[in-house]
Length: 193
Length: 193
DNA sequence: GACGAATTAGGACAATTGACCTAATCTTTG
DNA sequence: CAAAGATTAGGTCAATTGTCCTAATTCGTC
Image (cartoon, rainbow over the protein chains, first blue to last red):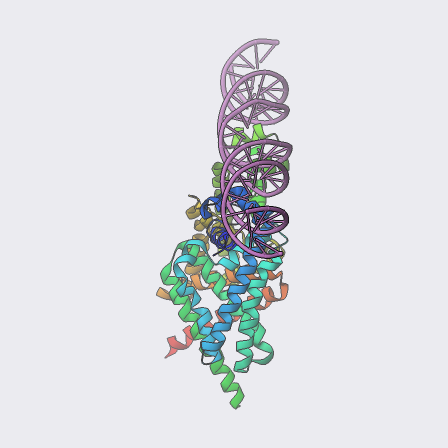
């Protein structure tokens, strides 16, 4: 892996674990095992490395969603794949919160220009989820349902982090899956009438 | 108001708007209009001022919840008061997120010892909400319902902030109130059978 | 009015920050 | 091999950080 990629990967991890503001050039350089001068050769400013990290996250997220699009048998199962990130990444979430939500919040407070880029990560999930709901036949309600479940997962991540509560994480995931089943059942019922 | 109280109030506002880490002694002192030496006379370390801010938030929150306990006619209306903070503080939330959630997340990332104190703010809401659900007759399920609605409101705040979306805020508040009505209806139905 | 305590001002301090530079080394290409 | 470019190391820079000190001022109390 190239030095540049190692920098991005390490910065990504540190920004997630410590926050953007609290992570210094020296932190990243020392974690990668290179000099600050070398670091500067690849990224001139702290905003540059932030942009690179966000773009990598965007690419990784897009890839993950594309993968689910292929492997998930039906849209409902794909949505359940999304919900289950909370379980799969449970340990990290309890320690550091949701990578997307916490970065977006921090950049909003810093009044950072990259906040909209970070929100683009949310948009990726939003449009993907909206497409799944559309495929299920929810029509114009699809985006609202996508936002709803996206918000639910954010709240679960925030509280699971605040209380370091594994049980809450699991029970809320169950509730979200139940909610999804209920929505689909409602839809089919109204389609019959 | 005493200088000490003005410092706490200003620090509270700046910590919320800019974040704890991104707010310096100089920021607070200059916003209050005092010298750094004067600031130091009242608070020796940055952790001291953070403790004072958290304690003031705890006191203010407790007072607000006590007030609702008195003015709200029934527990359901009190819970709706909680839900409607999202509307009342909508502008601030869209700009800076939820004061409780964002502070808790930041301190968790900083591995700060005061994180548990900040989480105490959540606990205040959690036990209060749990008490309301108990009064409604939800018994052992009360705490789970309290955590559920607390998480919902956190997620709504996070997304409303990320997208600066007022409509989402309003529609999700409606959904949360509908959810509450549904829970109460379910309870009454199961009590009849 | 005098005296001690509380408050305030204006610095100083070492450490760290993001940013930048130069020189040495490695890699590629003709 | 040789020249050119990419990469790396190490150091410098002004600015800012949290912390701390001393001296001046204000205040309450006798």
